Image (cartoon, rainbow, N blue to C red; front, side):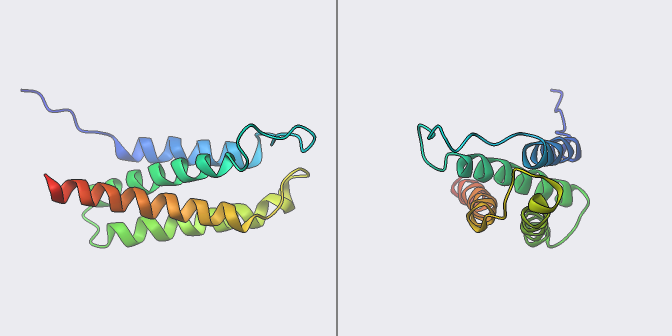
Length: 122
């Protein structure tokens, strides 16, 4: 049986580029038209940073880094914080949003916690 190894570095890099693109190049919705679901962008933050945390964790495990969970969570937190700080500086249509940072870190922690729980159940 052939077992394929997932390329977590590639997944992490692509996810990082998607985060950067969405954070700096994607134009947010207009304030004149209310969204169907208020604050739906927080779901995107939750999902993107959750998947980034998992990809980083697996990359660090493959590199035999002992504190893979803490390292991946710290990187996700710092990345989200830096992006929120840089958005108003580098763009004309973005502002600092503390709730984006909370959605980022909640997504990262929740995803890793759920996967750890599932792994322990098996």
